[in-house]
Image (cartoon, rainbow, N blue to C red):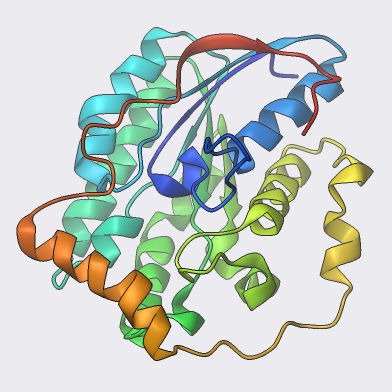
Length: 256
């Protein structure tokens, strides 16, 4: 049973796509914190240092040691999704840095919750290229799941999670349903109950959503701004800071 939890990563872990009425984001890591608190039947400490737009290198350089310094009992680690979307991806370098980060967390005596990101490639331009990269990266890191003190949650291989029902309008980030499903995958991997009020099982048994279509409006609203940021060297995470940089209490009865 874990009583303190820190999350590091990019937009996937920050919770982008699961926007709340006040403009903040929630996401799967917040749901996991609620699930841990419910299982413990008492408040737990939760920090989320993830920042959207970060490639794996900055995640490791800027977030890893900060998370370890909080001395949580478990750290969730995901990264590499933004590397995969670049024209060139140094796959061996990315896999090597990911591997080093996992070992660093283990060496600190902290349990590693290692996640692959959800797979959006059925809905994206050049999706086959990104799908192949993601599959190769996941395969290179599968052996880490056999280490003591590591729990691996392979969302990339969750075929049901690829359904358009789980994705936000930009088709790159999960929506609230998708984040809840990832949280369900995590709690299941930890052998903890998934709160029924999340509705994950009910949604999973519903008919698939309509086939994804990429319209001119989609390219105008989502693809072109993304290309613009790449050409100018900007990131969606520029000038952003972690939404929850320290361990703060999450009560078991907190609203999801």
